[in-house]
Amino acid sequence: MAYLSIRNVEITYKNHKTGKDFLALSGVSLDVEKGEFVTIVGPSGCGKSTLLLSIDGLLPHTGGEILIDGKPVTKPGKDRALVFQEFALLPWRTIEQNIWFGLELQGEKKEKLQSAADRFLKLTGLAQFKDHFPHQLSGGMRQRVGIARALAVDPDILLMDEPFGALDAQTREIMQNELLKIWDENRKTVFFVTHGIDESIYLADKIVVMSARPGTVKEIIDVKLPRPRGLEVKETTEYARLRRRIWELLQDEVTASAGWS
Ligand SMILES: Nc1ncnc2c1ncn2[C@@H]1O[C@H](COP(=O)(O)OP(=O)(O)OP(=O)(O)O)[C@@H](O)[C@H]1O
Image (cartoon, rainbow, N blue to C red; front, top):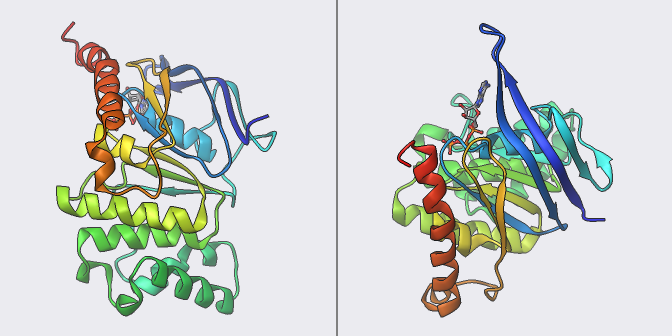
């Protein structure tokens, strides 16, 4: 059995005002092995964030099952951590204290906080900024703090919801490489939601292309590009083939979700 198995998952949102149900995800099935880097692409509103929240356990699924190591997901757990686009850093805390935050919530002792902060400040290249406050850092650096904070709780699964969406193109490329370096050292299982086709290929072992509402898995594409990856992979014919394929798959869905077809 796969490490993480999503089987026929359905998610319905209830509108408490109107009492009407809204089917956001339907028949989503996906198997992921430990340490795989999975990217998720799909048209706006197809349920990418919904899927991530349900893997986290913050959002209960209304049908099907999500199994991690054979155990059903029913609530959030220490084995999973979320990273959002809006860094969600606490402005009154220093960078180091922000990295402590998740561990503090888990009731860890000061020595553990300190050693985790030291390790991940170093890994994310932020050691010299540990006493700075979030507003004193650039967007890319703040996002690295968000990643360090998520890694500090040592999750098995990292759930990243468009983490680089707010960054400029150059910082985004730098962050992609940083993330791959960090992932190489940790080999966490990663789910990474993105609107970027290039980003989805460059990072992934496996790309999940979702269809328009109600969201489901349209195709799963294995990425066999060599690792460690550098910009040269973007010039290969395999990269161009993947790019064309994803674009074809998405084109119909984006048109459908925007109501143009
Ligand atoms: N709390 C909620 N209550 C009701 N409907 C919701 C709720 N959250 C999301 N939805 C709806 O569920 C659908 C899926 O939303 P979701 O945010 O998961 O999509 P997405 O693919 O992540 O979108 P985007 O790419 O624009 O971020 C959308 O139609 C959205 O309006």
